[in-house]
Length: 287
Image (cartoon, rainbow, N blue to C red):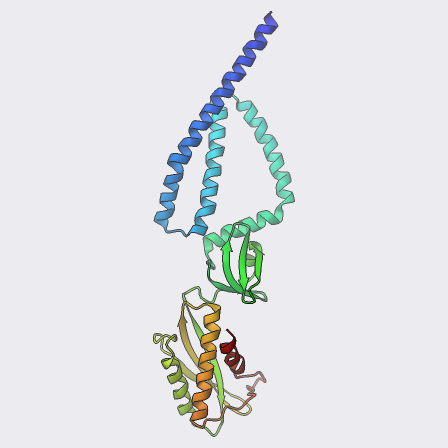
């Protein structure tokens, strides 16, 4: 009878501890979801963080609420020794999982760095290695990029943080450079004036900073003039289209003025100097 009484008392104590654990956990979890999460959301709103930065912060906050609630519930229920045992098992399991998932963890850390540093945002078009495309989505482990051939790339975040990523529209405007060669016998000042006029007349080329044209080099058969102008908040398609329109108009304006445009033109170091003139003119009709 004594052993039965002890067993019954032990079971009763365990049941009481279990009930206390469950009640404590539920109360703390509810307080966390009702009080803590709204406060965190309010702080995020005040900081002006975008929706892609909010998601990982809220997920981490929910995890911490569950962790803290379980820890306190174990302590109040008198199950501290059991919690320590679980912690030991969890630590061993975490080590094993961590070794097996090094790449995943590396990409998640890279995702956090992208959220914090903001080298690019959704909607930006970026360039890295041999790839170019528009960012569609940024997640903790991967970033989705839509190429200009309409292919979707799912890129591990570590690939983007480990390489140089060019974000042409990070400052919401971009400068274009367009090099044209004119004959040695032609009036260089007149040609430069026509190139500036074409830029000023284009409705999507910015007036401030104002367009400019400079003599940059002397090729084997031409004087090289480089136009520089800015466009605002461009997509990749806008970039190519405006470039093509400018090239088309410059070519027509110079030809109408009787100014020769030799082709191909080579610089003193032997590189082609017409900076994509024919390609740009073709692209303006294809995009």
